[in-house]
Image (cartoon, rainbow, N blue to C red; front, top):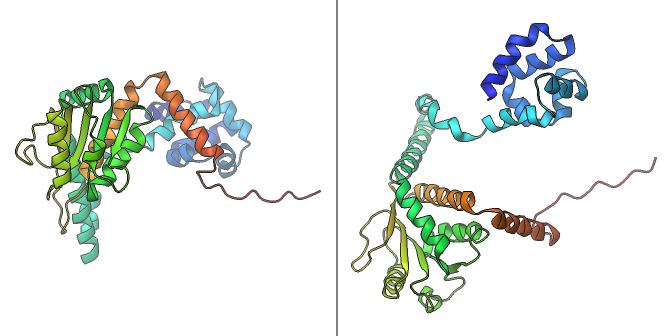
Length: 295
């Protein structure tokens, strides 16, 4: 929609009053700045009043200035990044030894994420989301470096799936906290080579109790007697000593996106309640308010 608005502005700019034409030219020339800046900053850069921008929005058929700016702000997101090619990496690699190494690292991460997402077939994603949503309790487990992914998946996912539990939560064993797992439950496990013995034991235990098993790993076969219902195979190749977790995080983010899309109004209210609670309890840092100056 951003491109259609720019085309509309170009076609109408000559017929607009001088102030509106000036504002329209700024939008055509600086779409990114227009998408990011508050109305007063934009008006100051153009040299017009904020009301001029409101009038331009109305002239284009929008009820508010925010409605006009929204498509430009949306265009700043990374949804078109994959269409830009890798020329920027090629150019970077020619600038020096460090830049060449930096370009190799960035290209490797892009490849890891792209391959991991390509392997994330929609039917697998649908099976996993169905298992998570239908489970009486959805357990999430991982150890060592993989625990960071599991923690994030649980931290966000529990707002949409109240029955989600992270195991182990503290310094205990995951098996201790899986003692009540059964056929109505599911286990989301994350493990990458070298595979965690504790995670493998947890998966075997969950299977023996009839729970559904969802695995996020760099291989479909990580140990005997581990037969997941759904496996998301991710690429973890890396130019350094440790595997890349970029692909794993990309898969986790997509699963959370599916949960959010299907969560419904109850989950939206729950997320809003979490946010309100955190703000009321001072969970987020806020800058100090400047003292009032008596006039």
